[in-house]
Length: 520
Image (cartoon, rainbow, N blue to C red):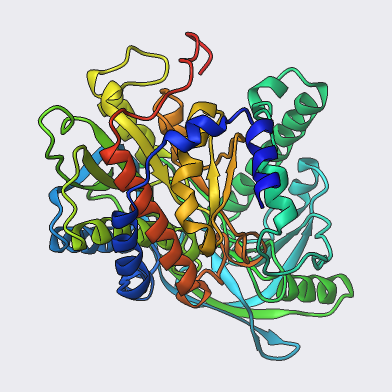
C-alpha cells in the first residue's frame, strides 16, 4: 500500500513531510469511534426526519415540523444558541393532501402517479376519457379549441420507450476508481468556461425553445379548463423521479393539476390510445398552498469555543434539510442531516470542549438553488461579488454531506491542494472503515459551493453511490428503508473526528488564493 500512497501524494502535489507533521489525537479518535460506532443514534434521528416528519418540501408544513424537531433535538444534546434563522423570502409552501388515480376502462388498474410540486387540485373527483393530444408545434393547438373542458389529457410528444440501465442498481467505488480520483493533478474546467462553446449555445437555444413550447401548451390547456394533465415521469420499475410543475413564487398563478406518471403506466395508456382503444380514468388530486409565512429558515446551533484567542473562530458543518415530496427524502438528504446532527451529538457525548466554536447548519431550499446556504453566507460573510464581512476570515472550514446513504471514502479538496496532507493524516485512522482517498477535484451541486464561492474552505465528502442516482434521488423510492446504518455511523464518526481536529488545530485550515474580482 505504501507505493500507491507515495504515487498519489506526489501526483497531486501533496508532500510527505507535511503529512507527517500534521498531528492526530489518537485518544480523541478512539473516543469518537467508540461513541459513533457503538452508541449511535443516527438511525433514530433519520427515522424522525423521514417516517415521522414526512416529506420536507421547501416551505411545507413537513419541513417546518422537521426543523422544529431537529432544533429541539440539538438543544437536548447540549448545544447552545439554537435557532431557526431566516435567510430571506422563499415563497408559497405546498403539500399533497390526497392523490388517487386509476384506469377504469378497458379494465381497472391503479396507476403510480405523483402530483408535480406546486400544481393545483382537481375540482373534486374527476372521471372520463383520456384524450391524447398530438402537438408537434404550437400551431397544432387551435384544432383542440373548445374540446378539452373537464378532460383528462396527455400531450403526445413522442414519449420515449423505457430504457433499463445496464449499470448495477447499487454500487460502491472500486479501488481503481478511487485511485484515479486520488491521482488527479488538477481540477476540471468549470461550467462557465463552456459558455462560448457552440455546442453549449445550441443546447441552451434548444432548451429555450422547449421551454417556450411548454409554456404555450400550458397556457392553452389552462384557458381550455382542462381537468387533469398526465405526464411521463423519468424512471423505470415503478420508480418516478419527481419534479416541480409550477412556480413557488407568491405572485405565480395557479397551475393545472398534473400527475407525473410512472413510465410503465404512462406508456400503457399511450399505446392504447394510439391504437384507437378507449381509456377512461378516475382521479382525485387535492393539494394545499401555504402563504402565511413566505420566508425560508435554516436550523442553526453550536458548541461554543473555550479558548480565549480562538473561540471567535468557527468550524461549520451542514447538509440540506429540505427534500422533494414523492417520498420522505431519506437519502436526499435526511441521511446527511442526520449524520451532521449525530456528529454534534458525538462531540458533546465525549465531553469535548473545543478551542474554536463548532456550528451546525441544516439548510432549506437547497433543491431550488442552494438558497438557504447562500442566504446564510451572504448575511454572515458577504456575497461573492461584494466586500467580505469580518466574520468571513474567522471560519476555518465548512464540511458538507449530501450524496446519499453511502459511506465516506474520502474527501474532495475543491482545488485546495494545501489542505491535502492535513486531510490525508486525518483519514489515516479510518482506513479500516474504507475512507482513504483525497482528491484535488471539485464536486458540485450542493451547499459547500456557497462557502467556496467566498473563498471559505468548503468541502464535500466522497461517498459510495449506492442506489442514489439509479433509484432514490428525488424519487418515490427515497424512504428510510434505503438507508444503510453502518454507512451512516461511519460517516458521522469520521466527520466528528474531522471537526474535532479542525477545532483544535493551532492554525485555521489554509485557503486557496482568493478569486479575482468579477470571476465569481
